[in-house]
Amino acid sequence: MSVSPSASEYIQDNFEPSDRIAVLLRNRDRDEVIQRIGTADTIAGRDFQEWLKSKNQSGFDIYIGMNALREGACSRTKQDIQTIRHVYLDIDYEGEMALAAIQKSDEVPKPNYVLNTSPGKYQVIWKMEGASPEEAESLQQAMAEQFGTDPAATDSTRVLRLPDFVNKKYEKEFHVQAEVHATTVYHLRDFKIDAEPTDSGRHVDQTLSSPRPDGAPITQSERDWAYAKRALARGDNPDVVIQRIADFRADEKHNPELCRAQDYADKARKSPQEPDLQDDSGRHKR
Image (cartoon, rainbow, N blue to C red; front, top):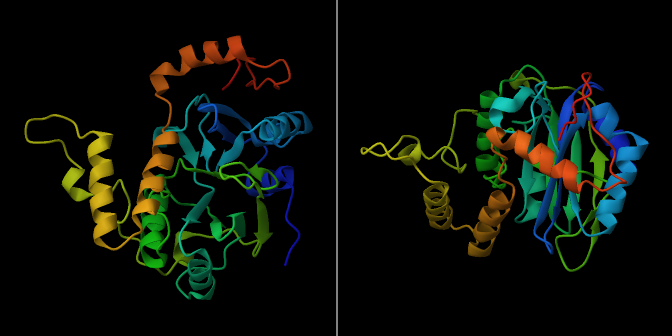
């Protein structure tokens, strides 16, 4: 068993120093979410890591986006993704069994990292290059279907746990740790699983992929309902389905059109201890 890397080591190993990545902090007790965007080099740095530790100690869970964002992005929508750095799975049900199936499978290569996020729950991560967001999501949807992992955690903008911080989600705190299993950077050809889009993910329901005949858009509530019906029909635990929907909703991305207003609001309430994130022009980035 390898020694779990620090948060800084994990970031440095998974991203180029100039990659722009998102860090998300969530305090469930206070119903507060903070998102910051900066270079991997800055976020792995001492000042930013000290700020994250302080926030974690005060009740915030710490997450990180696993793919690099384009220059100028102040949100993490799919349009903001510049480079796919990873594909991943989130195991939140029958964790030991699902993890063993992944590790023994001939259809997927050895993962680079396995994060133990809480008792019996894992996040499995492969380093990736050369894939588009659509290709990465199709692969993740196919793997989630194959191994019975969380189908809601298959979008390219997903944030995962950052190791070496404490999981504050449950009554009993849990120190998130990462095991290193491989150093290879993979390509789509290394995955033998059928990567055609499946109906296991919440965003691939063909009955909801187009507007209604009257032209009205499909709401997220309708997509949630369609996902719940499919999940229950295949026998998923109702409590798990409810939690997946709740987690997805809590992690909704910011509207890019609101970036400027949010930037100003964040600056106004920014803690004096929080490090500044700036680009080369000196503009504050969130």
